[in-house]
Structures are given as C-alpha cells and as structure tokens.
Amino acid sequence: MESKEFARLENLCQSRFREAGSCFHVCSQENYPVLFHNEEEFKAAMNIVAFAAFLFPDVRIFTFEIMANHFHFAMSGEKSMIDRFLKVFVSKLASHPALTGSSRDLRNMSFAIHPINGLDNLRNVIAYINRNGPVVNPNESVFTYEWGANRYFFNREALLRFESCGKRTTFRGRRKLFRSDGFTNEENIIVLDGYVSPLCYCRITEAQMFFRHNRHYFFGASRNIEASMEIAKMIGESIFYSDDDLSALVSAKCSKKYNCRAIAVLPKEAKIELAKELHFSYNAGNKQICRLLKLELPVVRALFPEKG
Image 1 (spheres, one colour):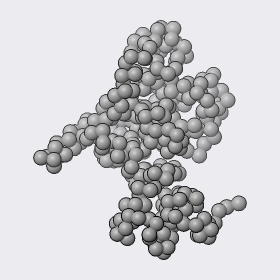
Image 2 (cartoon, rainbow, N blue to C red):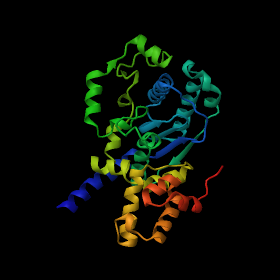
Image 3 (cartoon, rainbow, N blue to C red):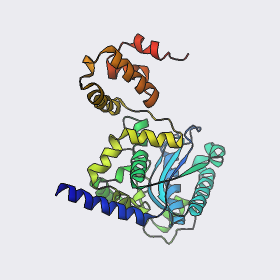
Image 4 (cartoon, helix red, strand yellow):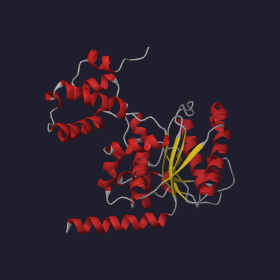
C-alpha cells in the first residue's frame, strides 16, 4: 500500500511539472556589492518584484529570495518573456528613490537563466532558494527569513496571518507602492509587513504541488545538502553549511564508510580523510572541522594553512 501511495503522489507531481512548461532557475551574480542595507531598501525590492510579476502575468514565479547583494527566482514561462521581466525589474530597481545609493550597481546587474531539466531539479532549486537566507544567517529559518516567498511554503500559520492581518490597498496606496499608475485598478494587492505579500503574485500553491507532501519539501529545504552543493556548483555560487548540516552528513559517512556512527572513536587517519572532504567539497572552515571531527586546531591548520 505504501509503495502504491508513493507512486500515486509521484505521478501527480510529474503531471504538474509537465503542465508547468519550461522552468528556470534565474539568479544574479553572488559576488556583487551590497545593494540592500536596511528594511526600507529590502521592502522596496520586494515591491518591485511584485510590480514586475503583475506586469508579466505569463511569467510564473514559484518562489524567490532577495539577498543583500543578489537574487534567486524559480519561474516558468517563455525565455523571451523572462528576459523582458528582468529588464523591467532591473530598471525599476535602479530608478527607485529608496535605492539611489545602489543605483549604479543595480543598473549593471545581470542575470543568468539556467534551464531546469526535470522535476527533481525543480524541487532542489525551490529548496535551495528557500534556504538561501537561513544558510547565510543562522538566526533565520525558512519560516522567518522575510525577503522572499519561502516562509509561506507549507506554513498554515503564515497563510492565516495573511488572511487576517493583510491590508487591501487603495488606489492611492497602489500608486505609492509601485510609483506607477499601471495597477491602479488591480484589487487583489494586499500589503503585509510593509510590502505586497508574495501570496498575491507567486504560484506558491502550485509550487507546493511539485512535492509529494510537506515532509518531502522540508527534507530538501533542511537536510539535502548534497543537492544544494550540486546547484551551487552549477550556478557558480559559494555555499557554506552550518554545523547541524555537516554533522548529519559526517554521521552518515562514518556509518557507511567506517561502520561507525561515533565520530570520537574514529582513528585519526579516518578523521583526516573526512577533514579533507569537508574542506574541499563542503567549504568547511578549520574551526568548524575541529568541532565536527574532534581534532586539535594545530592538526587542522597543518592540513589547511590559513591565509594572512
């Protein structure tokens, strides 16, 4: 029965993926100057995402995340339309008065559009985007990072808060939000926390249907670091993992390779081998390696001398 239910749910997900059409992971370069320095600037960027989404309804945004110096989108649509979406998006960012200090850098921003080549790839991209903020800031989670669509995924409380606390905008409010008369007749624009809620323009319900259930999604967003690493390599980003992420990984490798889950009792040679893998494959720092593998700092520094 369990295998039949798995097959049924997976077939539904595959059908929804086929219906979605061409899907893309769209991202700007990570090694860029800081663009957003405070809440006012992040809110302006959130509202500009909403503006572009309303202007190009045929570009379907499944999720997105705004980082201090770069953007990620998972979307579907015609590539030519996505190009137009991005041009308007960048132009609007560069001309917004709240972002004038970064306008030069914003005008020069470019995006890479990576085709998504299957349902599993789309799932991994959505999870990768939604965990981007928490990976950078360990005090955040996929439920709390504010600048994106991530916190609405499989989160009934966030949906209820939107329904009870969101404020429907007025004609004047829409004009002020978007600095444009383009959507003055659009009534389904709801503001929550000072910006248009992603629930008004992102296809979050549709995106959730690419996963069999909420546990399937949360595994990808919290534990599937191998998939995150592959995506980071493909798009040329550096990715760093928390101790919690790597601890689960190390335990699994110890069990599989050395038939032992207790890191403390591993022989030193095995720890050195794992240290090299953590350093070269997972960007682990020296002190992080020490904590995870119970190695002395001088031993790790001898393996990976620190610059400067």
